[in-house]
Length: 268
Length: 265
Image (cartoon, rainbow over all chains, first blue to last red; front, top):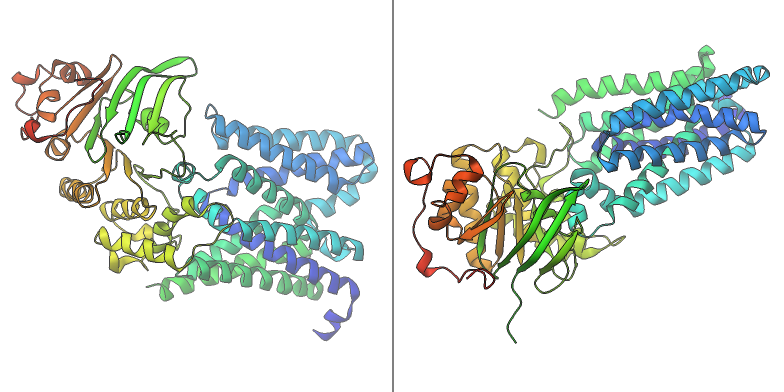
Protein backbone atom coordinates (compact mmCIF):
# COMPACT_ATOMS: atom_id res chain seq x y z
CA UNK A 1 0.00 0.00 0.00
CA UNK A 2 2.93 2.35 0.80
CA UNK A 3 4.33 1.72 -2.68
CA UNK A 4 0.93 2.47 -4.14
CA UNK A 5 0.80 5.87 -2.43
CA UNK A 6 4.38 6.80 -3.30
CA UNK A 7 3.69 7.50 -6.98
CA UNK A 8 2.81 11.05 -8.01
CA UNK A 9 0.28 9.92 -10.60
CA UNK A 10 -1.46 7.80 -7.97
CA UNK A 11 -1.59 10.73 -5.55
CA UNK A 12 -3.10 12.96 -8.24
CA UNK A 13 -5.59 10.25 -9.15
CA UNK A 14 -6.62 9.84 -5.50
CA UNK A 15 -7.11 13.57 -4.92
CA UNK A 16 -9.09 14.03 -8.13
CA UNK A 17 -11.06 10.84 -7.61
CA UNK A 18 -11.95 11.74 -4.03
CA UNK A 19 -13.22 15.19 -5.01
CA UNK A 20 -15.25 13.89 -7.93
CA UNK A 21 -16.42 10.94 -5.85
CA UNK A 22 -17.87 13.30 -3.23
CA UNK A 23 -19.53 15.46 -5.93
CA UNK A 24 -21.01 12.42 -7.66
CA UNK A 25 -22.28 10.99 -4.36
CA UNK A 26 -24.11 14.17 -3.35
CA UNK A 27 -25.46 14.60 -6.86
CA UNK A 28 -26.52 10.95 -6.89
CA UNK A 29 -28.78 11.72 -3.90
CA UNK A 30 -30.83 14.03 -6.14
CA UNK A 31 -30.53 11.76 -9.18
CA UNK A 32 -32.20 8.96 -7.18
CA UNK A 33 -34.77 11.27 -5.56
CA UNK A 34 -35.77 12.84 -8.90
CA UNK A 35 -35.50 9.56 -10.84
CA UNK A 36 -32.95 11.16 -13.16
CA UNK A 37 -30.82 8.04 -13.71
CA UNK A 38 -31.76 7.82 -17.38
CA UNK A 39 -30.97 11.49 -18.01
CA UNK A 40 -27.54 10.82 -16.48
CA UNK A 41 -27.04 8.03 -19.02
CA UNK A 42 -28.24 10.31 -21.81
CA UNK A 43 -26.01 13.24 -20.92
CA UNK A 44 -22.94 11.08 -20.37
CA UNK A 45 -23.29 9.41 -23.75
CA UNK A 46 -24.07 12.73 -25.40
CA UNK A 47 -20.72 13.94 -24.06
CA UNK A 48 -19.09 11.72 -26.67
CA UNK A 49 -20.49 14.03 -29.35
CA UNK A 50 -18.88 16.96 -27.54
CA UNK A 51 -15.53 15.20 -27.25
CA UNK A 52 -15.55 14.37 -30.97
CA UNK A 53 -16.52 17.94 -31.82
CA UNK A 54 -13.49 19.21 -29.88
CA UNK A 55 -11.22 16.81 -31.74
CA UNK A 56 -12.52 17.87 -35.14
CA UNK A 57 -12.42 21.58 -34.29
CA UNK A 58 -8.98 21.28 -32.71
CA UNK A 59 -10.05 22.67 -29.32
CA UNK A 60 -10.10 21.11 -25.85
CA UNK A 61 -12.44 18.07 -25.93
CA UNK A 62 -13.30 18.67 -22.26
CA UNK A 63 -14.44 22.21 -23.07
CA UNK A 64 -16.56 21.17 -26.05
CA UNK A 65 -17.94 18.19 -24.11
CA UNK A 66 -18.98 20.54 -21.29
CA UNK A 67 -20.75 22.96 -23.63
CA UNK A 68 -22.30 20.12 -25.62
CA UNK A 69 -23.48 18.20 -22.53
CA UNK A 70 -24.95 21.28 -20.84
CA UNK A 71 -26.69 22.13 -24.12
CA UNK A 72 -28.13 18.63 -24.47
CA UNK A 73 -29.23 18.62 -20.81
CA UNK A 74 -31.02 21.96 -21.24
CA UNK A 75 -32.72 20.91 -24.47
CA UNK A 76 -33.92 17.66 -22.87
CA UNK A 77 -35.18 19.64 -19.86
CA UNK A 78 -36.86 22.23 -22.08
CA UNK A 79 -38.62 19.65 -24.25
CA UNK A 80 -39.75 17.64 -21.21
CA UNK A 81 -41.08 20.80 -19.50
CA UNK A 82 -43.25 21.62 -22.53
CA UNK A 83 -45.14 18.40 -21.79
CA UNK A 84 -45.73 17.24 -25.37
CA UNK A 85 -42.90 14.71 -25.27
CA UNK A 86 -41.94 12.86 -22.10
CA UNK A 87 -38.47 13.26 -20.63
CA UNK A 88 -37.71 9.58 -21.36
CA UNK A 89 -38.59 10.05 -25.01
CA UNK A 90 -36.53 13.26 -25.26
CA UNK A 91 -33.52 11.46 -23.78
CA UNK A 92 -34.15 8.53 -26.12
CA UNK A 93 -33.91 10.96 -29.05
CA UNK A 94 -30.86 12.97 -27.96
CA UNK A 95 -28.77 10.16 -26.45
CA UNK A 96 -28.31 8.16 -29.70
CA UNK A 97 -28.31 11.29 -31.88
CA UNK A 98 -25.43 12.87 -29.97
CA UNK A 99 -23.58 9.54 -29.86
CA UNK A 100 -24.11 9.04 -33.59
CA UNK A 101 -22.72 12.53 -34.17
CA UNK A 102 -19.72 11.60 -32.04
CA UNK A 103 -19.10 8.37 -33.95
CA UNK A 104 -19.45 10.15 -37.29
CA UNK A 105 -17.03 12.90 -36.28
CA UNK A 106 -14.54 10.44 -34.80
CA UNK A 107 -14.49 8.55 -38.08
CA UNK A 108 -13.08 11.74 -39.65
CA UNK A 109 -10.13 11.61 -37.26
CA UNK A 110 -8.84 8.01 -37.16
CA UNK A 111 -5.61 8.89 -35.34
CA UNK A 112 -7.59 9.88 -32.29
CA UNK A 113 -9.07 6.48 -31.48
CA UNK A 114 -6.44 5.61 -28.90
CA UNK A 115 -7.10 8.68 -26.73
CA UNK A 116 -10.81 8.22 -27.15
CA UNK A 117 -10.64 5.02 -25.08
CA UNK A 118 -9.64 7.20 -22.13
CA UNK A 119 -12.86 9.20 -22.45
CA UNK A 120 -15.03 6.16 -23.00
CA UNK A 121 -13.72 4.04 -20.12
CA UNK A 122 -11.77 6.53 -18.00
CA UNK A 123 -8.11 6.74 -17.21
CA UNK A 124 -7.70 8.67 -14.02
CA UNK A 125 -4.08 7.57 -13.74
CA UNK A 126 -3.26 9.89 -16.66
CA UNK A 127 -4.46 12.99 -14.80
CA UNK A 128 -1.85 15.76 -14.92
CA UNK A 129 -1.12 18.25 -12.13
CA UNK A 130 -2.92 21.03 -14.04
CA UNK A 131 -5.99 18.78 -14.48
CA UNK A 132 -6.18 18.28 -10.72
CA UNK A 133 -6.79 21.99 -10.18
CA UNK A 134 -9.40 22.21 -12.94
CA UNK A 135 -11.26 19.11 -11.77
CA UNK A 136 -10.98 20.19 -8.13
CA UNK A 137 -12.45 23.57 -9.08
CA UNK A 138 -15.34 21.93 -10.94
CA UNK A 139 -16.01 19.57 -8.05
CA UNK A 140 -15.93 22.45 -5.55
CA UNK A 141 -18.36 24.53 -7.62
CA UNK A 142 -20.75 21.56 -8.02
CA UNK A 143 -20.61 20.78 -4.33
CA UNK A 144 -21.06 24.43 -3.41
CA UNK A 145 -24.17 24.74 -5.58
CA UNK A 146 -25.65 21.49 -4.22
CA UNK A 147 -24.99 22.63 -0.63
CA UNK A 148 -26.36 26.14 -1.17
CA UNK A 149 -29.56 24.99 -2.83
CA UNK A 150 -29.98 21.72 -0.94
CA UNK A 151 -33.37 22.53 0.56
CA UNK A 152 -34.68 23.91 -2.74
CA UNK A 153 -33.52 20.86 -4.72
CA UNK A 154 -35.02 18.59 -2.06
CA UNK A 155 -38.42 20.30 -2.23
CA UNK A 156 -38.39 20.27 -6.05
CA UNK A 157 -37.43 16.61 -6.04
CA UNK A 158 -40.29 15.68 -3.74
CA UNK A 159 -43.07 17.91 -5.10
CA UNK A 160 -42.22 20.35 -7.89
CA UNK A 161 -45.76 21.72 -8.11
CA UNK A 162 -45.94 22.57 -4.40
CA UNK A 163 -42.44 24.07 -4.55
CA UNK A 164 -43.56 26.33 -7.40
CA UNK A 165 -46.74 27.24 -5.55
CA UNK A 166 -44.58 28.19 -2.55
CA UNK A 167 -42.76 30.65 -4.78
CA UNK A 168 -39.51 28.78 -5.46
CA UNK A 169 -38.11 29.48 -8.95
CA UNK A 170 -38.55 25.90 -10.12
CA UNK A 171 -37.51 26.36 -13.75
CA UNK A 172 -34.16 28.10 -13.13
CA UNK A 173 -33.39 25.63 -10.34
CA UNK A 174 -34.15 22.67 -12.60
CA UNK A 175 -31.79 24.01 -15.26
CA UNK A 176 -29.18 24.69 -12.58
CA UNK A 177 -29.38 21.07 -11.41
CA UNK A 178 -29.14 19.84 -15.02
CA UNK A 179 -26.08 22.06 -15.51
CA UNK A 180 -24.40 20.69 -12.38
CA UNK A 181 -25.23 17.17 -13.57
CA UNK A 182 -23.76 17.79 -17.04
CA UNK A 183 -20.60 19.48 -15.70
CA UNK A 184 -20.04 16.73 -13.11
CA UNK A 185 -20.48 14.08 -15.79
CA UNK A 186 -17.89 15.72 -18.03
CA UNK A 187 -15.51 16.20 -15.09
CA UNK A 188 -15.94 12.54 -14.17
CA UNK A 189 -15.11 11.31 -17.67
CA UNK A 190 -11.47 11.11 -16.59
CA UNK A 191 -12.47 9.17 -13.50
CA UNK A 192 -14.65 6.36 -14.83
CA UNK A 193 -15.32 7.30 -18.45
CA UNK A 194 -18.44 8.21 -20.40
CA UNK A 195 -19.75 4.66 -20.41
CA UNK A 196 -19.52 4.13 -16.65
CA UNK A 197 -20.10 7.59 -15.20
CA UNK A 198 -23.87 7.20 -15.07
CA UNK A 199 -23.39 4.22 -12.73
CA UNK A 200 -21.36 6.42 -10.42
CA UNK A 201 -24.26 8.88 -10.36
CA UNK A 202 -26.66 6.27 -9.01
CA UNK A 203 -24.82 3.52 -7.11
CA UNK A 204 -23.44 5.55 -4.15
CA UNK A 205 -26.88 6.99 -3.36
CA UNK A 206 -28.51 3.57 -3.77
CA UNK A 207 -25.94 2.19 -1.31
CA UNK A 208 -26.85 4.94 1.15
CA UNK A 209 -30.55 4.36 0.67
CA UNK A 210 -30.11 0.64 1.33
CA UNK A 211 -28.83 1.12 4.88
CA UNK A 212 -29.71 4.64 6.06
CA UNK A 213 -32.65 5.58 8.23
CA UNK A 214 -32.51 9.28 7.31
CA UNK A 215 -31.61 11.49 4.38
CA UNK A 216 -28.55 12.74 6.29
CA UNK A 217 -27.45 9.15 6.89
CA UNK A 218 -28.05 8.35 3.23
CA UNK A 219 -25.80 11.25 2.17
CA UNK A 220 -23.04 10.21 4.61
CA UNK A 221 -23.10 6.58 3.47
CA UNK A 222 -23.20 7.67 -0.20
CA UNK A 223 -20.13 9.87 0.23
CA UNK A 224 -18.21 7.26 2.27
CA UNK A 225 -19.02 4.45 -0.16
CA UNK A 226 -18.07 6.67 -3.08
CA UNK A 227 -14.69 7.47 -1.49
CA UNK A 228 -14.11 3.80 -0.67
CA UNK A 229 -14.92 2.88 -4.26
CA UNK A 230 -12.45 5.43 -5.63
CA UNK A 231 -9.58 4.59 -3.27
CA UNK A 232 -10.21 0.84 -3.26
CA UNK A 233 -10.90 0.74 -7.01
CA UNK A 234 -7.66 2.56 -7.78
CA UNK A 235 -5.72 0.23 -5.49
CA UNK A 236 -7.24 -2.86 -7.11
CA UNK A 237 -6.55 -1.35 -10.53
CA UNK A 238 -2.87 -0.87 -9.58
CA UNK A 239 -2.65 -4.29 -7.90
CA UNK A 240 -4.18 -6.37 -10.69
CA UNK A 241 -3.51 -4.08 -13.66
CA UNK A 242 -7.20 -3.48 -14.33
CA UNK A 243 -8.79 -0.42 -16.00
CA UNK A 244 -9.30 2.14 -13.19
CA UNK A 245 -12.86 3.14 -14.18
CA UNK A 246 -14.07 -0.46 -14.29
CA UNK A 247 -12.42 -1.26 -10.94
CA UNK A 248 -14.04 1.75 -9.26
CA UNK A 249 -17.53 0.96 -10.58
CA UNK A 250 -17.24 -2.75 -9.77
CA UNK A 251 -16.21 -1.96 -6.20
CA UNK A 252 -19.07 0.56 -5.91
CA UNK A 253 -21.47 -2.16 -7.07
CA UNK A 254 -20.00 -4.66 -4.58
CA UNK A 255 -20.50 -2.13 -1.77
CA UNK A 256 -24.10 -1.64 -2.90
CA UNK A 257 -24.84 -5.38 -2.75
CA UNK A 258 -23.21 -5.62 0.69
CA UNK A 259 -25.27 -2.62 1.89
CA UNK A 260 -28.42 -4.07 0.37
CA UNK A 261 -27.98 -7.33 2.27
CA UNK A 262 -26.97 -5.54 5.48
CA UNK A 263 -29.93 -3.18 5.17
CA UNK A 264 -32.42 -6.06 5.14
CA UNK A 265 -31.22 -6.89 8.64
CA UNK A 266 -30.38 -3.36 9.85
CA UNK A 267 -33.62 -1.68 8.83
CA UNK A 268 -35.90 -4.47 10.05
CA UNK B 1 -63.16 49.57 3.94
CA UNK B 2 -64.29 45.96 3.67
CA UNK B 3 -61.74 43.16 3.54
CA UNK B 4 -61.26 41.68 0.06
CA UNK B 5 -62.73 38.25 -0.58
CA UNK B 6 -60.41 35.27 -0.36
CA UNK B 7 -60.72 34.66 -4.08
CA UNK B 8 -62.14 36.89 -6.77
CA UNK B 9 -62.35 35.59 -10.32
CA UNK B 10 -63.92 37.71 -13.02
CA UNK B 11 -64.34 36.70 -16.64
CA UNK B 12 -61.42 34.27 -16.50
CA UNK B 13 -60.39 32.60 -19.75
CA UNK B 14 -57.60 30.09 -20.19
CA UNK B 15 -56.53 27.93 -23.12
CA UNK B 16 -54.08 25.06 -23.49
CA UNK B 17 -52.55 24.84 -26.96
CA UNK B 18 -55.39 27.02 -28.34
CA UNK B 19 -58.07 24.81 -26.81
CA UNK B 20 -60.27 26.79 -24.44
CA UNK B 21 -60.33 25.12 -21.02
CA UNK B 22 -61.80 27.88 -18.85
CA UNK B 23 -64.37 30.12 -20.48
CA UNK B 24 -65.50 33.37 -18.88
CA UNK B 25 -65.55 32.12 -15.28
CA UNK B 26 -66.78 34.55 -12.65
CA UNK B 27 -67.12 33.76 -8.97
CA UNK B 28 -66.09 34.92 -5.53
CA UNK B 29 -65.06 32.92 -2.48
CA UNK B 30 -65.65 34.64 0.84
CA UNK B 31 -62.93 34.39 3.49
CA UNK B 32 -63.51 31.60 5.98
CA UNK B 33 -65.77 29.51 3.78
CA UNK B 34 -65.36 25.91 2.62
CA UNK B 35 -65.91 25.73 -1.11
CA UNK B 36 -65.90 22.48 -3.04
CA UNK B 37 -65.00 22.53 -6.71
CA UNK B 38 -66.71 19.69 -8.50
CA UNK B 39 -67.08 18.65 -12.10
CA UNK B 40 -66.28 15.82 -14.47
CA UNK B 41 -62.74 14.96 -15.50
CA UNK B 42 -61.45 17.42 -18.05
CA UNK B 43 -63.73 20.22 -16.88
CA UNK B 44 -60.74 22.36 -15.91
CA UNK B 45 -60.74 22.00 -12.11
CA UNK B 46 -56.99 21.47 -11.82
CA UNK B 47 -56.33 24.22 -14.37
CA UNK B 48 -58.42 26.63 -12.31
CA UNK B 49 -56.54 25.69 -9.13
CA UNK B 50 -53.21 26.15 -10.91
CA UNK B 51 -54.28 29.63 -12.00
CA UNK B 52 -55.21 30.48 -8.39
CA UNK B 53 -51.86 29.14 -7.18
CA UNK B 54 -50.08 31.40 -9.65
CA UNK B 55 -48.68 28.45 -11.61
CA UNK B 56 -50.55 29.37 -14.80
CA UNK B 57 -51.14 32.84 -16.16
CA UNK B 58 -54.75 33.54 -17.20
CA UNK B 59 -55.37 34.22 -20.87
CA UNK B 60 -57.66 37.07 -19.86
CA UNK B 61 -59.77 38.18 -16.92
CA UNK B 62 -59.13 39.17 -13.32
CA UNK B 63 -57.89 36.78 -10.63
CA UNK B 64 -57.20 37.99 -7.11
CA UNK B 65 -56.33 36.16 -3.91
CA UNK B 66 -57.03 38.25 -0.82
CA UNK B 67 -56.92 41.32 -3.05
CA UNK B 68 -53.48 40.52 -4.52
CA UNK B 69 -52.11 38.63 -7.45
CA UNK B 70 -51.97 34.82 -7.29
CA UNK B 71 -48.50 33.62 -6.31
CA UNK B 72 -47.81 36.68 -4.13
CA UNK B 73 -45.65 35.30 -1.33
CA UNK B 74 -47.08 37.76 1.21
CA UNK B 75 -50.42 35.98 0.87
CA UNK B 76 -49.32 32.35 1.19
CA UNK B 77 -51.59 29.62 -0.05
CA UNK B 78 -51.40 26.14 1.41
CA UNK B 79 -51.47 23.55 -1.35
CA UNK B 80 -52.35 19.90 -0.91
CA UNK B 81 -51.86 17.87 -4.11
CA UNK B 82 -53.51 14.61 -5.03
CA UNK B 83 -50.39 12.69 -4.14
CA UNK B 84 -46.66 12.99 -3.57
CA UNK B 85 -44.56 10.13 -4.87
CA UNK B 86 -41.25 9.62 -3.13
CA UNK B 87 -39.10 6.79 -4.59
CA UNK B 88 -39.65 3.50 -2.75
CA UNK B 89 -37.37 3.18 0.26
CA UNK B 90 -36.13 6.78 0.10
CA UNK B 91 -35.47 7.74 3.74
CA UNK B 92 -37.27 11.08 3.66
CA UNK B 93 -38.86 11.67 7.05
CA UNK B 94 -42.33 12.99 7.74
CA UNK B 95 -40.76 15.94 9.61
CA UNK B 96 -38.68 16.84 6.54
CA UNK B 97 -41.77 16.84 4.32
CA UNK B 98 -43.67 19.11 6.72
CA UNK B 99 -40.72 21.48 7.06
CA UNK B 100 -40.90 22.06 3.30
CA UNK B 101 -44.05 24.05 4.02
CA UNK B 102 -41.77 26.75 5.48
CA UNK B 103 -39.45 26.96 2.47
CA UNK B 104 -41.63 29.47 0.60
CA UNK B 105 -41.56 31.83 3.59
CA UNK B 106 -37.83 31.34 4.04
CA UNK B 107 -36.95 32.15 0.44
CA UNK B 108 -33.84 31.08 -1.44
CA UNK B 109 -30.58 30.10 0.28
CA UNK B 110 -31.88 30.56 3.85
CA UNK B 111 -31.81 27.55 6.10
CA UNK B 112 -34.70 26.62 8.41
CA UNK B 113 -34.28 27.79 11.98
CA UNK B 114 -35.64 26.49 15.27
CA UNK B 115 -38.84 28.55 14.85
CA UNK B 116 -39.46 26.95 11.44
CA UNK B 117 -39.02 23.50 12.94
CA UNK B 118 -41.38 24.46 15.78
CA UNK B 119 -44.03 25.59 13.26
CA UNK B 120 -43.64 22.33 11.36
CA UNK B 121 -43.85 20.22 14.53
CA UNK B 122 -46.98 22.09 15.65
CA UNK B 123 -48.61 21.59 12.26
CA UNK B 124 -47.93 17.87 12.52
CA UNK B 125 -49.57 17.77 15.96
CA UNK B 126 -52.62 19.56 14.59
CA UNK B 127 -53.26 16.86 12.01
CA UNK B 128 -52.92 14.16 14.66
CA UNK B 129 -49.50 12.97 13.48
CA UNK B 130 -47.36 14.55 16.20
CA UNK B 131 -45.66 11.26 17.08
CA UNK B 132 -44.86 10.32 13.48
CA UNK B 133 -42.22 12.93 12.60
CA UNK B 134 -39.31 10.48 12.49
CA UNK B 135 -41.10 7.91 10.32
CA UNK B 136 -40.35 7.57 6.62
CA UNK B 137 -42.96 9.39 4.55
CA UNK B 138 -43.08 6.53 2.06
CA UNK B 139 -44.04 4.03 4.78
CA UNK B 140 -47.28 5.82 5.69
CA UNK B 141 -50.71 4.84 4.43
CA UNK B 142 -52.33 7.04 1.78
CA UNK B 143 -54.58 8.69 4.38
CA UNK B 144 -51.64 9.43 6.68
CA UNK B 145 -49.63 10.86 3.79
CA UNK B 146 -52.46 13.24 2.95
CA UNK B 147 -52.57 14.38 6.60
CA UNK B 148 -48.86 15.06 6.43
CA UNK B 149 -49.40 17.11 3.26
CA UNK B 150 -52.05 19.14 5.09
CA UNK B 151 -49.52 19.69 7.89
CA UNK B 152 -47.00 20.82 5.26
CA UNK B 153 -49.54 23.31 3.95
CA UNK B 154 -50.37 24.54 7.48
CA UNK B 155 -46.69 25.00 8.33
CA UNK B 156 -46.63 27.88 5.84
CA UNK B 157 -49.34 29.67 7.88
CA UNK B 158 -51.73 30.07 4.96
CA UNK B 159 -55.10 31.81 4.96
CA UNK B 160 -56.29 29.84 1.95
CA UNK B 161 -56.00 26.08 1.61
CA UNK B 162 -56.25 24.65 -1.91
CA UNK B 163 -56.70 20.90 -2.21
CA UNK B 164 -56.62 19.11 -5.56
CA UNK B 165 -58.48 15.80 -5.37
CA UNK B 166 -56.77 15.04 -2.05
CA UNK B 167 -58.71 11.86 -1.34
CA UNK B 168 -58.15 10.06 -4.64
CA UNK B 169 -57.18 6.49 -3.83
CA UNK B 170 -58.28 6.61 -0.18
CA UNK B 171 -60.84 4.22 1.27
CA UNK B 172 -64.24 5.63 2.35
CA UNK B 173 -63.41 5.84 6.05
CA UNK B 174 -60.08 7.60 5.38
CA UNK B 175 -61.93 10.02 3.12
CA UNK B 176 -64.48 10.82 5.83
CA UNK B 177 -61.72 11.38 8.42
CA UNK B 178 -59.82 13.56 5.97
CA UNK B 179 -62.74 15.92 5.31
CA UNK B 180 -63.57 16.10 9.05
CA UNK B 181 -60.00 17.22 9.70
CA UNK B 182 -60.15 19.86 6.95
CA UNK B 183 -63.47 21.11 8.28
CA UNK B 184 -62.11 21.31 11.84
CA UNK B 185 -59.12 23.32 10.63
CA UNK B 186 -61.39 25.60 8.65
CA UNK B 187 -63.40 26.44 11.76
CA UNK B 188 -60.54 26.58 14.27
CA UNK B 189 -58.21 28.70 12.12
CA UNK B 190 -60.72 30.65 10.07
CA UNK B 191 -59.13 29.12 6.98
CA UNK B 192 -60.69 29.48 3.58
CA UNK B 193 -60.81 26.09 1.91
CA UNK B 194 -61.12 25.37 -1.80
CA UNK B 195 -61.19 21.66 -2.52
CA UNK B 196 -61.51 20.03 -5.95
CA UNK B 197 -62.93 16.54 -5.66
CA UNK B 198 -65.41 13.97 -6.92
CA UNK B 199 -66.56 13.13 -3.36
CA UNK B 200 -70.00 14.64 -3.82
CA UNK B 201 -71.56 13.02 -0.78
CA UNK B 202 -68.83 13.93 1.72
CA UNK B 203 -68.42 17.41 0.30
CA UNK B 204 -72.12 18.03 0.62
CA UNK B 205 -71.76 17.41 4.36
CA UNK B 206 -68.84 19.76 4.89
CA UNK B 207 -68.80 22.43 2.20
CA UNK B 208 -70.65 25.72 2.47
CA UNK B 209 -70.73 26.19 -1.28
CA UNK B 210 -70.33 23.95 -4.30
CA UNK B 211 -68.94 25.27 -7.55
CA UNK B 212 -69.79 22.93 -10.38
CA UNK B 213 -67.41 23.44 -13.27
CA UNK B 214 -68.10 22.01 -16.68
CA UNK B 215 -67.64 22.96 -20.29
CA UNK B 216 -70.65 25.29 -20.14
CA UNK B 217 -69.24 27.33 -17.26
CA UNK B 218 -70.07 27.20 -13.56
CA UNK B 219 -73.08 26.57 -11.39
CA UNK B 220 -72.65 27.83 -7.85
CA UNK B 221 -74.67 27.52 -4.67
CA UNK B 222 -75.27 25.55 -1.48
CA UNK B 223 -74.82 21.79 -1.86
CA UNK B 224 -78.55 21.18 -1.48
CA UNK B 225 -79.20 23.35 -4.53
CA UNK B 226 -76.28 22.39 -6.78
CA UNK B 227 -76.68 18.66 -6.17
CA UNK B 228 -80.30 18.86 -7.29
CA UNK B 229 -79.55 20.95 -10.32
CA UNK B 230 -79.97 19.84 -13.89
CA UNK B 231 -76.47 21.20 -14.49
CA UNK B 232 -75.04 18.44 -12.29
CA UNK B 233 -76.97 15.79 -14.16
CA UNK B 234 -75.74 17.20 -17.45
CA UNK B 235 -72.14 17.55 -16.30
CA UNK B 236 -71.85 14.00 -14.99
CA UNK B 237 -74.34 12.54 -17.50
CA UNK B 238 -76.50 11.34 -14.58
CA UNK B 239 -80.19 10.76 -14.89
CA UNK B 240 -82.13 13.80 -13.61
CA UNK B 241 -81.26 14.21 -9.91
CA UNK B 242 -84.79 13.77 -8.54
CA UNK B 243 -84.94 10.40 -10.29
CA UNK B 244 -81.63 9.26 -8.87
CA UNK B 245 -81.63 8.50 -5.14
CA UNK B 246 -77.89 7.73 -5.12
CA UNK B 247 -77.01 11.37 -5.67
CA UNK B 248 -76.63 12.89 -2.22
CA UNK B 249 -78.40 16.11 -1.48
CA UNK B 250 -76.62 16.80 1.79
CA UNK B 251 -77.95 18.55 4.83
CA UNK B 252 -79.83 21.67 3.96
CA UNK B 253 -77.89 24.31 5.85
CA UNK B 254 -78.34 26.97 3.21
CA UNK B 255 -80.01 29.44 5.60
CA UNK B 256 -77.00 29.52 7.92
CA UNK B 257 -74.33 29.75 5.25
CA UNK B 258 -72.33 32.82 4.32
CA UNK B 259 -73.97 34.69 1.48
CA UNK B 260 -73.19 33.51 -2.01
CA UNK B 261 -70.95 35.42 -4.31
CA UNK B 262 -72.10 39.00 -4.77
CA UNK B 263 -71.48 38.44 -8.44
CA UNK B 264 -73.97 35.55 -8.36
CA UNK B 265 -76.63 36.59 -5.86
